[in-house]
Length: 264
Image 1 (cartoon, helix red, strand yellow):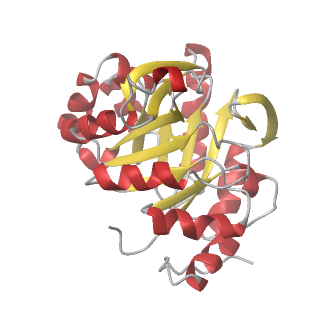
Image 2 (cartoon, one colour):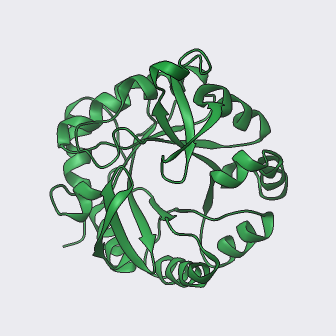
């Protein structure tokens, strides 16, 4: 539904550092978030997403500082998620330079939070972040779509059908869906195309595909499956791919992207 496909590097931040693991486990240090964000901005990233993967009270001040310093260096939209529990949290993140706010666990616990954020700041600020995994055979009858919403990095399954939750969130004011496949996360084996396609069918707002990117060939199929944007982390942090590599692959597949002047 978007005119151009966005390429979004994701920075999972803990203790002021970028970390990455497989299926949200065995996290390892990948670098300074401000330096990496600046690198991706120079490469032509369309947006940057920060996810505070610890989101404790002690870490929150660090996150505000990281967002502020990044906003001073990077002049593209910043989405920040992790530990957002109130509209006041949203207000403070916006005040230090965030453009959009990702909400996950707090909205599951209290869906009215989505209404409150959308009413106060507008749908364009509100991103519903979904950590989704395929259900086991034992739970298939409880979750019609076959995909369940999880919390705690995929370790805790809820009773929410992922597609039903996405529909409800959009009705409550979510302006975008960040759909992360827990099964694919960190595996570098490709996006979950079935999940992307199903989300596209139920969503009237942009869908960001996340989880599983491992090669330049993985991105175009996600767009063809229905993604408006593609998000990746480890392939960028490791230097395996640049944002320019991904955009070139999309263009080669006939997918329009925003042209950028890449810094030397």
